[in-house]
Length: 178
Image (tube, rainbow, N blue to C red; front, side, top):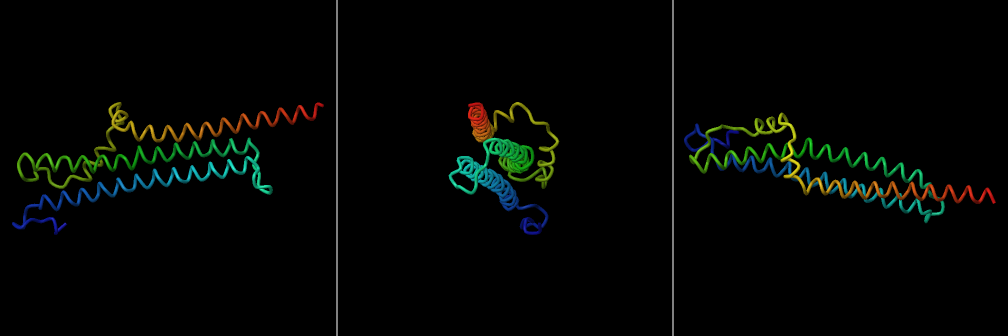
């Protein structure tokens, strides 16, 4: 932190502190974007593998439609867990870091100096203590929509697999009855 001391030796350099806070906020943002994109890629890869195996296009590797449906259910649970990690943890880290940046910017506009001191961890802690509110849902519509669209596709895959399982089971029963 000695690099944040201003030329007078006793006051924080506001621009350097702001830059440090910005670096931390961007780090959290980068973590969130990687979490989302890598999770989406993983879900897409698993769905593709299940689809290929369920169709039986690879002769030696086939998966029953019931097993495919259960894999989709597991994927849905995994996707919900990723959403929880994103929305309830990483997103709150980012929000706290952004709040600290906002306070620095407001104070610097009003007085030209920092009155509150170093506050990044205090703002992040406050973010975790605050319950999620209805305004949070409005603010994160895009993130919530992203997760809901993918979850809907996973649930549709599970439903389709169950329908295919039912139809293959009933056609097998019809064959044995004849």
